[in-house]
Structure formats: structure tokens, C-alpha cells
Length: 563
Ligand code: DGT
Ligand code: CA
Ligand code: CA
Ligand code: ZN
Image 1: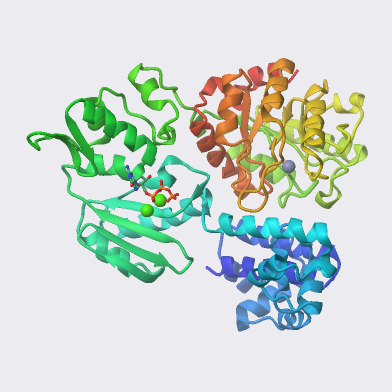
Image 2 (image 1 turned 30 degrees about the vertical axis):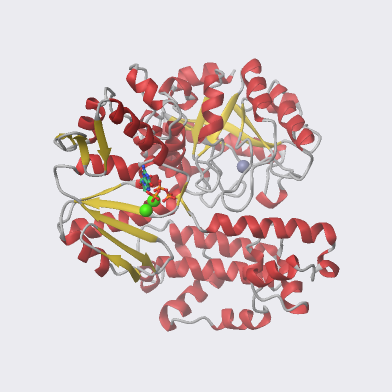
């Protein structure tokens, strides 16, 4: 399938046309087309051969011609021309938070900055002050520094896809493997992949994996490689007798392991990656399965998501581990976008795809009008959308589409619409996207105002972080959680892999304070509806049970919460 290549081509076109100063709508059009291709259920080249490219959503004549040329010749003349117009380094500089296309263009053309690395060096030595000004220089240097740490770790979703590919590869060669490490614990970012098997063939297979760039080491128990995408993969080959102990050890976390080892020591035993042993005699006490090891240590099985040394050992010993929420507990999805604002798929398509996932309901939450770049809706357009929703609800019964909105909290804490209009929605989510460089006090105050607004049901992605790109807003989360509780408002765990916001620490705190959370996808296309799975992993790491999650309720129960 060439879909991935074509989607990348379109994304590059989008960046290039932004950088070269073409109108912004072109850039958006390419991006939308790229999303369509990513979500296309079949090979784009087959569609081309049938002459049906323009039947794909968001692919008009112009883009279809370009895809056709690219698929036939492997090149695109139009893009080569654009590339000549855009100085080297511009696209890379645009990846830095705080640098828009115009600044990137200026820096690369007039100041000869050709890479992020060079930008960092130049800024560090104070060379770009006349180009950017003192304040901007400082701000951008900060984001460049953050980028570096963020990029050395993968997003959980990237690690998941990669691990699925690897697991499939091993299984196709008859070797059963287990994924351990931070990915098994469900961390939002993952450093490297840790894979376990008890078949000697595993080591050779890893070395022969098509994605390998370089072998780091190859030994009898541990083999490590670097993949072409820069990711390190460790495969460990272990015996059956101690396999459970190894899985436990290499799942981590290190801090959890240390606590377990101390319990073992207290019992006159020794715990390591090979098993649990009598210290004096060296006799094996346990090791076949994780459950067996936990049992001998006087504990019940602890789900990997909880193994962070944050109280799980005591809870397990006392039999009060939570019964963690699962993705299949979710009866609906409460944040998503359609082509009415900045989504790539139409309302109708989103609703049908959500219904096909087995949901009882969804809330459609397109942006409010002050989010201009996201094509936010005027009151008039919302009224039109509601008609469309009413019609679809008739058609899709008993499935129910709730009328929702992602209402921007303006810089003074007010919302885009007045209260009588907001009362028409089934659900109002409040978000802070814009003017996020205010002082911590102002940002907190904005969130508190939103949580005190009678029409608001939930605060969406409360910190507005973008993992590896932008830190969360420096808001007073304890105060926000307390206010949400006092006012009976909900907080969101946004499942979008770059957001995962609230994170596990604050979601757990909110739950402990008695706040109800919602787990949703924030999908901008049908393909992204699966984001609820990532949100659920965060919820599990936050110790959440079904009863803490609003959209684990059936529709009737949810509607009561939304009044
Ligand atoms: P990552 O890869 O940075 O996202 O995080 P992990 O947790 O996957 O860490 P990694 O790959 O270095 O090691 C995998 C697991 O192996 C780790 O979670 C716990 C275990 N482990 C590694 N080194 C040590 C150690 O020095 N002591 C103990 N007790 N466990 C270790
Ligand atoms: Ca790891
Ligand atoms: Ca590792
Ligand atoms: Zn949002």
C-alpha cells in the first residue's frame, strides 16, 4: 500500500505551502486530504487505477492530479518547485513551538539558520536577538530545549504500533513474545521497547527484522538493536522456569521491583530476573508466572499500569486494589469534531463509525466561533447542525448524538455564547486554547470561571499540554479540582495521544477528591475514535474504576449528570 507515502507527501505539501506563504486554506486542504488518505480503508493506488480519486473525501481535481502524478512517476514536479522557493531549514524550524511559517522563513533565508541544532547554538550565543527580539529569543530557546528531551522518547501510541508490528513479525515466525517495560505499564511516553521470549530463535529473528539499522549487542540472553526510526529494541531470551519472574522484572518499574525485592529479603528470599529463591540454599521458591511470585510475597496480582510504587503494594496486600476501568466499559464518547469545525469527517460518518464501535451515544463537540483557525461555529451554524443531529438521531435510534460544544474560555474567563444559547446544548465542554501565555493566576482564574459557569459540564484537556512540544499551562490544579468537586463539574482525560490530559497523577488526585472524570477521544476523524483506548490506559494508571467515569454510565445515567 502506498497510502502512507501519499499521506506524507500531502503533509509535506501542506507545510511547504504554509512556508512559502501561499494562502492558508491550501495548507489546510492538503492536511485534510492527508487525513482522508490515512483513514482510507483500501490502497489509494487501486482507487487511482479505477479513476476514482476524486470520490475520496477532500480530494478535489487539483489534489487528485498531484496524487496521480506522484503514484505514476514517484515524483511531483509541483512540489519540487515549491521546495526551491523554500529555503533549507524552514520546515524544520517550523516544528519549534513559537515559530510560525513566516519567522521560520525569515530565519532561514535572511539569517542562514538551517536546522534546529543551529538555531539552538545561535540563540545560546545571543546571535538572533535583532531578528527575534530579546523576549522571543528567550522563549524560543526554552522551547528548543524542551524539544530535545521530548524527542528522545516516543509517544505511547507510536510505541504501541511499533510493538504490534514486532509482535506480529515474531509470531509469523512461530515465536511467541511478550512486551514488557514502560509500554506494558502504559506510560504516555516510552524510551525503548523491551521484549521477552523463551525461544532461542528470538535473538536471530530480531537481528533479521527488516527495520533494523544496527545491532548493538547480541548475546545468549540479551540482544539489542537500533531500528532505522531511531528506536532501541531489547529482546531477552529466558527459560520457562523463571519466565514470570523475568516478565515481572523487565516490566518494572524499577521502584516497584525494589519494593518487591525488599519483601523477599524480609522472608529470607532473593528475588531477581531469574526467579524467587531461598537465600541460604538457592532453591527455587517461585518464578513460572507473575501471579505465583506475587502470591509467595503475600500479594495479589498487580496490574502493570499500577506498578509505580505509589501505594499499589499496600493496597494489594490489604486486598483493596481498584477494579480498574476498561475500554469496553465505555458506553459512549464525549468529545469529537466533525467537518462542521476542524474535523476531517462529516457528522454522519463520525456518528455511524461511533455506533459501529458499539456505543450507545456520543457527544459531538465542534469548536465555538472564537477558535477561528478551527473554523469555529456561529450560533446560526450551530442551529443548522442541531437540525442535522435531530435528523440523524431519528435515523440511528436508539443510538443518540448529544449536542455538544467545545466552548473556548476567552482570556477574561467568559465563554463565546451567552447563557440562554448555551442552555440549548446537551453538554458544554470548556477549553482554554488561546492566549495561553497569561500568568498562572490569570490562567487559573479563567479555568475557575469556566467551572463556575452554570452551563458548563466539563473542563476539557485542563492543562492544554502537548507531549514533547508544549508543557501544560502552569495552572493551580488542586484549586481547579476542588472547584470542580464543589460545583459538581467533570474533568476530562483527553485520549488524543499528544494530549493525554489530565495525566495519571492529576486524574488520580481528582478521583480521590470525588470528581467524576470522562474519557474521550477528541477525535478529528473516524480513525481517531480509537483514542479512547489511550485515554483508558491513563485512567487505569490513575486508579480509576468504572464508577469514576461519566461515560461508563448508560445514556440515562449520563443525562442525569449533565443537567
Ligand atoms: P523506558 O524504556 O525509559 O520508557 O522505561 P522502562 O521502564 O521500560 O525502563 P528500561 O527499558 O530501562 O528497563 C525495563 C525494566 O527493567 C524497568 O522498568 C525495570 C527493569 N530494570 C531495568 N534496570 C533495572 C535496575 O537497575 N534495577 C531494577 N530493579 N530493575 C531494573
Ligand atoms: Ca523500556
Ligand atoms: Ca530497555
Ligand atoms: Zn480542544
